[in-house]
Each structure stands twice: as structure tokens, then as C-alpha cells.
Length: 358
Ligand code: B12
Ligand code: SF4
Ligand code: SF4
Image (tube, rainbow, N blue to C red; front, side, top):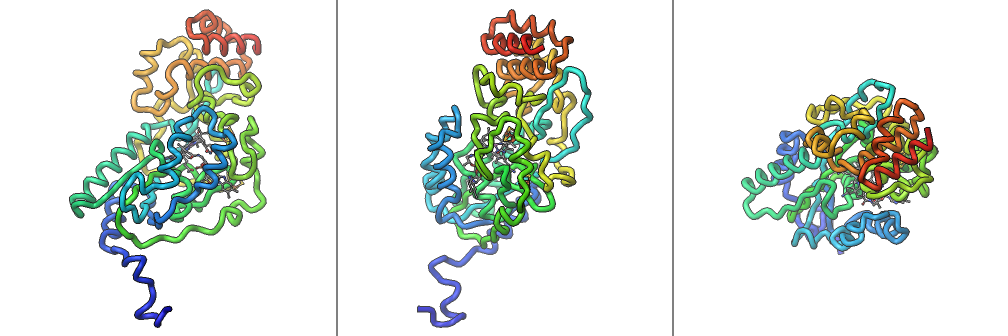
């Protein structure tokens, strides 16, 4: 029974937050260039029901690591014994898209125009942990950016970094969705920041993202089937892309931003402060005949330190051939014929399809 405001509230069982550590974390995060840093409770993991529904319906496509990594996502204490709080961080990556060169060029999703965020953010997080441990020896920490078994969008929503739009993306009010997320699990109590209002309040009756998707990848609001998403098909999927989805790829040669481009929350986002994430020359629009004709070793060298390196070279050439088929320009015929005579069966298949489409 509560005995009064002074003696009984807040409940002692929650343990008193450690404001000093919170302040240290906030100031270090800001100094390292994180745009937002917010704290939330980690007594249980958010988003697990949605995650389970996603996996059960097979929407993870060939990403079997999502099935294997279910347990730590649902029980993050497996990642960090004594887990108490999560620190959620964001890094804005919005830069104006360089002008369309026209001709035989394909479009790259904006997250991949600059330096690979896994390296950039990962390096900052490592430095962050080192600094925090030197301030607080013995502090238990576990960090993740993209590749660790943490449902980052759900943690970001819980900590109030943004809200999850119908396009599944975490949208920061006033700043848009072109944001990288990172999570740092901590074995100490921190003062929690509140989540924002519910997604429905921010999307309202809008459904532009759902309607624009050229491959109908949205099963419904907040629910995406990766098997149909151009981002998955062009980056993660190996082997031939299902024929019925190729036309929908349009000009997207690596990733897809359509469901973000149409979002009113992205109409005038502030330009990112991170110059490492600015478009590198020749990375926002790819010269497709060059991609097809260039040997893998040279492509790897060209995309050193870029997320695009992930698709080099079979998948990138496959995508380039499909986009050339979609562009329908007969000038693409010579490079497609060379690709159709090559050794890689996936690239050959895509080039033959494109030649037939011209
Ligand atoms: C696998 C993966 C993908 C897959 C699947 C995407 C997906 N929507 O699930 C593919 C390859 C398709 C993909 C694409 C992209 N990705 Co990705 N991806 C991931 C990864 C590694 C795991 C995501 C995951 O667990 N998906 C499973 C579903 C269930 O989770 P979720 O989308 O996070 O879902 C939450 C909401 O959608 C919501 N929800 C789900 N169903 C429902 C139903 C209802 C009714 C409600 C209310 C809510 C709700 O709850 C879920 C959990 O809370 C994360 C990094 C990470 N470790 O989390 C990056 C991540 C989500 N991706 C990211 C990015 C940038 C992209 C792309 C924009 C890249 C691009 N331009 O091509 C696209 C966006 C596509 C889209 N509209 O979602 C960023 C997103 C940043 C942001 N602001 O949201 C992340 C966080 C990486 C990072 N560290 O920055 N991605
Ligand atoms: S990223 Fe592109 S393909 Fe994937 S859901 Fe969004 S609009 Fe559809
Ligand atoms: S396009 Fe509309 S429905 Fe989709 S996320 Fe943005 S506001 Fe929400």
C-alpha cells in the first residue's frame, strides 16, 4: 500500500535512476555526433509479437538469420546479463539527391550514397562504449547497428526517437525518416524518455506509401512482405529475381526509397550534418553499362567503404540488367548481349530477360 507521495512514490523496486550516468551518456553521444539519444526501459523487449507474425508468415524471405536470431530479440537479457535500460540513438542521413543524369543510369537508395553506416556508426559506438567504460569501470554494455539481433525500430519507438509510419519506417517528426538507428543496451537504470503519440496520430488517413509501392510489398499498414520489396530483392536476395517483380523495379538498381520519397514527413527534411554520408561521386546514380562491363575486382575497389559493395558483383550486375530492360533503350543492347554471353547464370538470365524486353 502506498503511504504517501514522499515515502511511497516512485516505487523503490524500480531502483533510483542514475542521473549522472544519464548525463554522461547524453553528452558523450552528442559529442560523438549522434543526432538523438533517448533512454527506455528494457524490462521486456518491444515489437516481438509483430516480429513473430512477420516470421510466421514467411515475410523474411531468405533471411533465415531472422529466424535463428529470434530468441535474443525476444529476450535481450541473453545479449547482456543484468540488462536494465536501452539507449536508442539516431543519425540523420538525408542529403539532396544529385540531379538525374538521364540515359542509362539506375537509381540508388539514399542510405547508400555515402560511407557505409555500419562502419561509421559502429566505429562511433565502439568509441562511445570505451569512453563510458573509462568513466564507469565494469559498466555492462552491448551495442548494435543493423546487424545485431535487436528489433531497432521497436526500441526507437519505445524511447520516443520517432513513430513507426505505415511504411514501417521510424519517422522523426520535423526531420523525416532518413535516419539510421542504433541501440546500446546498458545494465544500469536510466531515466526513461516517453514514447511519442501513436502512429495513427501521425499518419492519419494518409496511405501514399502503401499505394506507391510498385511491387505491392505492403500486406497492410506497418506490414511489409520482404519477398516483394525491391530493397530486399536488389540487396539481400541471391539468384534470379522473380520475373513478375522485375518490371516493378523500374530504375532502382540498389535499394528503394519510394515509400519514403512520397511521405509528407520527408518533404523538407533538414540536410544531414554528417559529411561522410553525403553522396559520393557516381554512387547515387549508377552507370548501368559500366556496371555490366566492369570486372568484379574493379567494382569492389570502386565501392570500397560503401554499402553498395554488399551487392557486388553478381547481384549488382543482375539488377543493372533488369533496370536496362525496364528503361527500354536500344542503346543498352550491346552491353546486355555481352552480359548474356557471360559465365554467371544469374546475370545471363537477367540480361536475356532484358534483351527480350527491349
Ligand atoms: C531485415 C531488414 C530489412 C528487410 C525487411 C524490412 C522490414 N520492414 O521488416 C528489408 C531488406 C526489406 C529492408 C528494407 C529497408 N530497410 Co531495413 N532493416 C532490416 C533489419 C536488419 C531488421 C528489421 C526487422 O526486424 N524486420 C521485421 C519487422 C517485424 O520489423 P520492423 O519493420 O522493424 O517492424 C516494426 C514495425 O513495422 C511494427 N509493426 C510491424 N507490424 C505491425 C503491425 C501493426 C498493426 C503495427 C501497429 C506495427 C507493426 O513493429 C515492428 C516491430 O516493432 C533492421 C535493423 C534491425 N536490427 O532492426 C533494418 C532497418 C529496419 N532497415 C533500415 C532501412 C534504412 C531500410 C530501407 C529504407 C533501405 C532502403 N532504402 O532500401 C528499406 C525500407 C523498407 C521498409 N519500408 O521497411 C533502417 C530503418 C531506419 C528507419 N528510420 O526506420 C534499419 C533500422 C537499419 C538501421 N540500423 O538504420 N530492411
Ligand atoms: S522500399 Fe520500395 S519496394 Fe520496398 S516497400 Fe518501400 S516502396 Fe515498396
Ligand atoms: S506516406 Fe503517409 S501513411 Fe505512409 S508513413 Fe508517411 S504519413 Fe504515414
